[in-house]
Image (cartoon, rainbow, N blue to C red; front, side):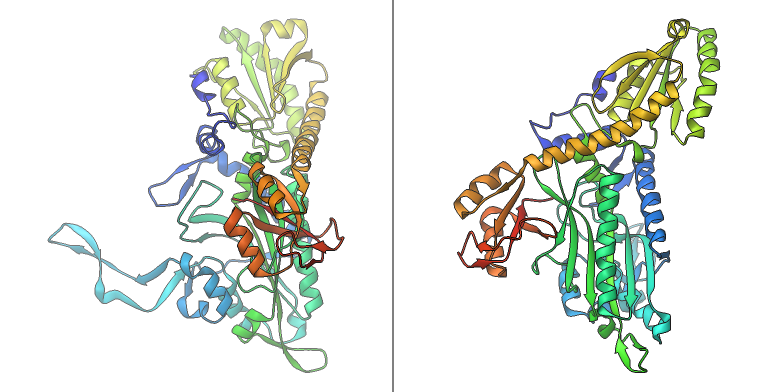
Length: 493
């Protein structure tokens, strides 16, 4: 059974299959009976809860409050902002009726044709429209601004090709929606939140990211500017891991949201929106995990330390438990999430394999003989290295190991990413290097036509125009026209 748990397709053989197998074997999620949707299992949801808790804390520290808005959006709302509706039209699921009835002939249930809605509803693909219709009732004066609201919710987009966590029809996320009195304040908010996302990705997920601006072709539907954090997965593909949008006055104008400013003049409100989703789970999996299973950064691991007792009798187990009780109490006092697995229905070998697949950062194994010798076996999941260490002071050792694992995972991912960033100057070199994966820094003339040509011919897109990076002007690799700076191209999820 332990061998079956760790019997994965190797990443080098089939990265996509490895990922799908890992999601299931690590007990994170499984396919559901609903097309394109998944069931997030308790262990997977526990990781999402850790993410949610840290992000929620960070949002509140920057002045935001949580609220909740309806799941159903009147269809007429989407038509008010032209770019927005065009961007989401193909992904919308539509509610047309409000009642079912029993079909006596077939013994089944059918939609009651007499119960058609006067106005159809859209299951929210995102909430800008319903929220800005609401803000119209909240805002009259500059004294009502800013509004800094976040929503934790689910959304639905009818995706054609789905993969658990990375792209599902229904997914969990947060979406911030803020209203401001000035353009400058709204732009500052949009940048602030992309920096919050980058902070979370690097310091909690241990995922290095590049911050930048999306090209006009890639920005959010209805936004004037979209800011993004881009991460690189182990197969060299990019994963957009969080976005923040400067919406200008587009939605305020669409929903007639005005305020009286300090000069007693009426003007439209300035807006932002920003969000991350359960796609972060996919980023976490693909950045750190290996052919043995999941690898979790300690800050987000539901279980940071698992202790597996090795015993042959009830007396042995009681001796181990009595010895460990004060240690476990001290670890919990320090905020370390520890599990003592004394279940006798599974062999130690199975437990070792199970916790390895689930990515628990540190494992301790201890038996009656270890207690006599004053030692305990410790294993780090990131390196799979085992070591027999003194039992006295094990709490300090574990605390140190958890901190070291968190740092080591980030550094390993950063070094990998940096090794896969290259500069090219010609289109021929670009087409050759894009086959190897990674981030390619190249000059682009700023036109949508050139961007579309590159995408069509190479399947690579502009991931972002980086905030930091090579600002040296040059010539577009495709057209030879002037280019203000290098941008990042990659194939992506």
